[in-house]
Length: 159
Image (cartoon, rainbow, N blue to C red):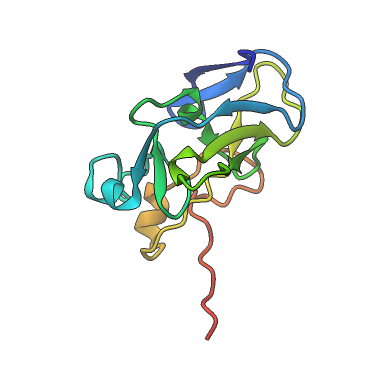
């Protein structure tokens, strides 16, 4: 993949990823890389937790998480937005080893040079979405339709 992006400071949050060349709608931009770890490993480790409001963890499948704290790519700096211009696309490996599944970030529309890349993180937490948790996971994307939080709405359980 040609180098069309660069990481630098962002007005959304900390670091961000920006286009330095035009990116076409549907273009695969970057792979979200990092160490494959089991969910149990991550839960027991020190790579982030629900109370931090910061994560380089990406759920790969039911067995594994990509932990970009280790061997991560530029993709770990892409910020969340309620009006994203990218999406995360899962590519499942043909074999039985779920560690070989991969995640790519693709453009959902044309992106101009200088524009910040963003996708909806789709964060779901088992804990209650209290005002405190919503503040921890505050969204700063600035979109007109911003929900104010990176947390996805809870789905009602069927009775």
